[in-house]
Length: 246
Length: 198
Image 1: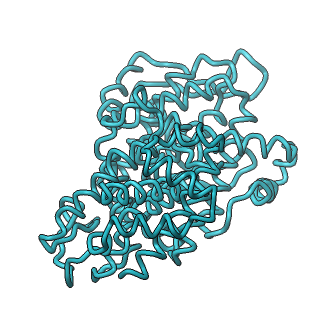
Image 2: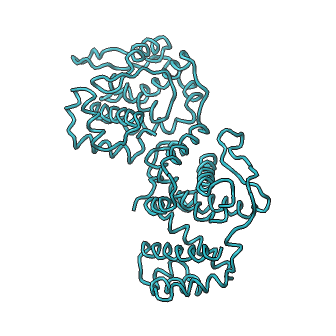
């Protein structure tokens, strides 16, 4: 009985110190535990045992995997009014990054956010070669909007997609569904913030609302079209919904 | 109160949720604090430190969930942190303590095929909680808090009259936060007495 009581006291104490992050922090600090090093070690340990880690692809495999993903995005969105080349690029960027896909990419900072120019040019030709899409300027409008016109062989990408993206399909579908009707400018901001946060992480700095706002404005002078409140609102939405760099 | 935002994600896999910088640090702290307290001082006789052991248990709990996410049923209990604490971590620590006599220790090993390695690390197998006289200890705790009415009330309800946590909170008319504060203070008294005895 007395021993049970002592055990119960230990369990209660364990519950109390781990009730929330603040109490856990306070307790571990009082015990002299250096949590920063354990957090770093934990992330490293988890990364090395990531069950989803795939064997790396060579450059041509990587290219074709990306083309298949791009085809999925274009197939799902081609009839949306707001879907043009910029939105296509940003959705591709977000799918690749949110789902931790490890491809050969060459994203650079462009006025409309992160962009892999070389791939975008190559994918248009590959779409036609595969008989999936014709990518051209919209002849019905005076604007320079680019449209994706499905070709007869459009469904040819599906078997590849199922093979390559079976595990990620839920996340990809969710991302496409989320952004399908968004304004191009807004998805451009999401992709830019995402890239800025990744950049801050890679430099080992703390991510704050202010640091994100600064990076967005430093990205390109075009970003001044977004006011600070909007950048912060989008940043918070992203971290709340998980569309946020790991 | 800040909690690891483990339940707010909707699009990424469990691996990605848990390794997110918004979730992982808080989650590891909560699990390590829980394991650290459960492991107790007896493990100071191990070659491995108590915090390293707490880390191993916390990581093992996280890893087991990532490998078998479907065992967590949000319909039954939507709180993943509680699931990790009570369904995985507590069991891991309990099994570990029960198997102490075998002079082996499990450790998280990301490079190994199973993710766990067994090490022979015990120098001697003594747990101070086993070594002390429990009945006398409880008596000593009561004596130590005789003038501390809030602690004494809680001690009597929770441990002598065996009220549940919820019943104790209601009976005392205190918040959950205050209950936790008192439990932590009581634990300090308890540890002090155990230290003297050992």
